[in-house]
Length: 370
Image 1 (tube, rainbow, N blue to C red):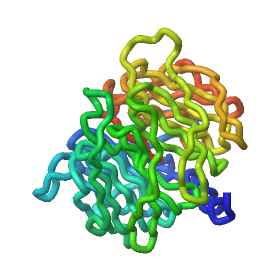
Image 2: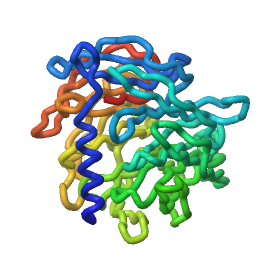
Image 3: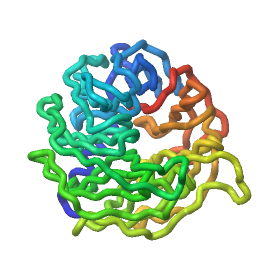
């Protein structure tokens, strides 16, 4: 990793450790909800692992993803709707964060329907949006927390061999390289990750190739390991993980190993979905819907290679998103179909999760943000 990449990575890690404080002195947690209420708010007690509902933070329909600005002054959201401002697109919105409360700041149309994910680059100037339903991607220039209209858009047209899920392109997740020079869009429908060069001044993207996953795999999300050169792409449709080597020369991704998540003989429904990596890079977790499990691996800090350690029940149904709290003593799981957030104690030394946790009501939770 270059010095600049290391500096950016350190800044990103530091921001994760500085959650918004609730007025009571507890930590404030925001939850994206796939309901008309949009963004819910909770107070978090890190001593006990308790969540206390604190109402609706912002009304924006069908919020699939939320993320902070680097300074945590602003919050950005993806709204997976089919129409916004009279146009057949999803929406992206920004909010000011003050004293644990959200105030609307701006909202814009994305490129097409079903906006399911947003990602902000490390300068805080470029927001990317992925549109699952319309199979498209968009970028927005951010100025003082306000979003410009879409600066760049791309409409993908490919498909994959799975006739039920890959009849067309489905952009599902946006991310940035460790040095912030490249942008990535996981396309579940085309079995690929689109790669772009990033211009942070103009918020424009330039094609820089693609990574081809196994046909029918359905790459859903991409997460970079703290070592600065390893990435994990979780494949929804066959519940596998592609361990990738990232090149800082051209932003390309190369397959190192493909890992099967499911236990031998499993024949039930399965849809892998998300990834969590501990700050020290030693623990990596993958969530899988269908068997409603969290798979735990030990990661080599230098190589990023994975060793299977265990499998834990997620505490509910359809674990859409999951996170570690800032102390990394707790894991919170957004169980979408059972309308609950489950909380499990975690050993900071071994990474092992408690077999049993506790759950708190949440209407269709999609994304948890400290």
